[in-house]
Length: 323
Length: 236
Image (cartoon, rainbow over all chains, first blue to last red):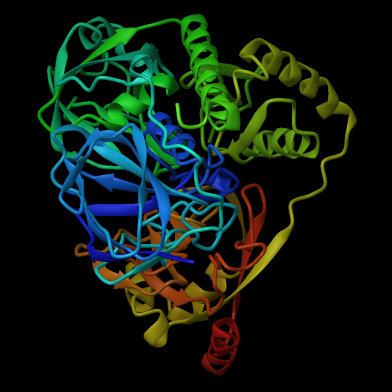
């Protein structure tokens, strides 16, 4: 059913889901929501399966006209959203009705927000996913960002018995000084002298920061003598920190599958949500962790998500509705 | 030229907390890539528990894994066992995928550049280019873009000084000692010698691609009328 009409698309608004991993061996980037945590929370708040399709809203948000009654949830950056001029904070759901206008402004804290709607955004599944990949022009709305006058559909779903709010203890804080935990490698041996500098220096997020990667600026890191800058091209993954000739790190994200630059370190998967919320001008430190620590954090994050899921399936229980 | 041998034992690298890079050598070399192909074939035949994707490249492959379901130690053991199997099982020879190409004319505006650079006639360039099977070492950069090995040195040609802003999808080109096909419309600086009417990336099809890494590509020259016919067919 028709859910929204796009009155103004914002700077970059795309349909995303958990990503498209079945064709990365054919050069198709995974895409998907850049902040996997906020993405899943938005769905849980809207009463959806955790990996339904949502809108990923970047920096300057859209203006949407509501075309049918639904529950909507926001998670991620605060973009001073309003519903018919009434302020709507993130990390909660709310009911919208035909004729309402949902308006987003400029991000004041964080960089990306996720909008989930009852039943999920209903766009065609392309190669196993609804995620928009701008480079391959697939997924989402015709493989592109939203435009004015697009009509967005949603799937059929029961509306919530009671609106949901994420308890404060689970709400992340977006800081302008960001610590990213990272593992050395995969090519740490090319930077024996630079590795220590890398984990000690602070970097600034430049304006060249998008879903492809975040280009940083700070103390340049150079390869040790005898190590070439480029290697035989190999698969890359989100979080890899590559160092081109100028020695300024680039954190690779979800729109690339292979690369030929050496990678000094890799941001751990549970910290990629922090990268997604980093804004140009924010400062970044890399903190070295071990693989064991990273895997413990991975398990903790999965457990936390299960806990949140259980919390909401509890509140949807008729006995606790309305509390 | 000295031959480059695969490593005796694969070298493992951690690429973050969800990917293991497995290296089989440190050169672009048919024997090393053959090893990558063999291991990839075996892994895909019986995907180990917790492995989300296998991505083969020139001399390495990446195993994307779910840390809740497996560990690098367990994967390392799986890879060790595979080494043993490799000696026993027969890996089928790579499939050869034929790609029809209309050389020269409007579809291959740079064929004269390649010919002149190498002191050949365009016909000789076509004969040499379509006379070999090219191994697909890796697919990356854009969907379906294959990194091919095996270009005959007699037709190697430097890139264009000024890249073109738009090459139609299917354009076949040469850059230095490499040849390749642009699967979709994109800017590019390769010397374009022809174009295939086939759609190399068709997302709406059940199988959106015609080939995978490890297979081989054979370019088959076709006349313009045949190009037009297939091109029409592919559109519908």
